Length: 212
Image 1: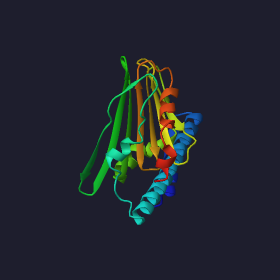
Image 2: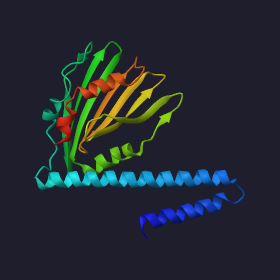
Image 3: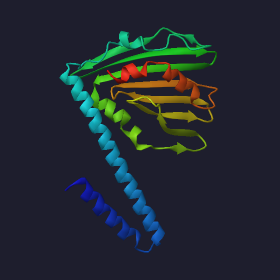
Image 4: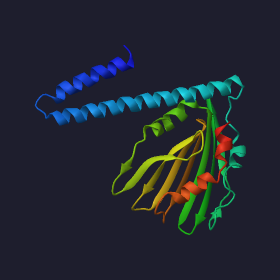
């Protein structure tokens, strides 16, 4: 049975259940929710297919390994204004059928700190897909504790989401770059919004990474 047929059957069943002892507007709301879920699922499926196509193109060119962590470290900011940069860290992890590299650097200023991490999942496609799949859903969460929402960088092949912890004033941005790299910029303390971490992310050569 096709995905479309399954969705249609579920929608009909939902309306039937909602119509039993409930108001018509409640049934309509439930129907709209189901439609939205179906559309989101199709969007995610489309994004996964695009990611798979990019991965296959890299394989055809013989690009199957993650970049060594020492090379990844070169993409991390050398300095951030007002902060003291620590020495970068990193590692390349390999296991049967999968490998990835990650580079991290910490920057401190009093009790505040920033951490920038860049991971290459070129040889761990399944992990990357699981980590970034929901980025295409456009989910927004806003309450007394936090605001989390999607972030459009305006850069081709770069998508992600931003997070602001309102009480602790911590901010973080997570970006999928070229369906291969995962960039995380997190700042603790004194963050009223996510503009600071966005600026740090944009200082990195995202366009270069996105076409690898």
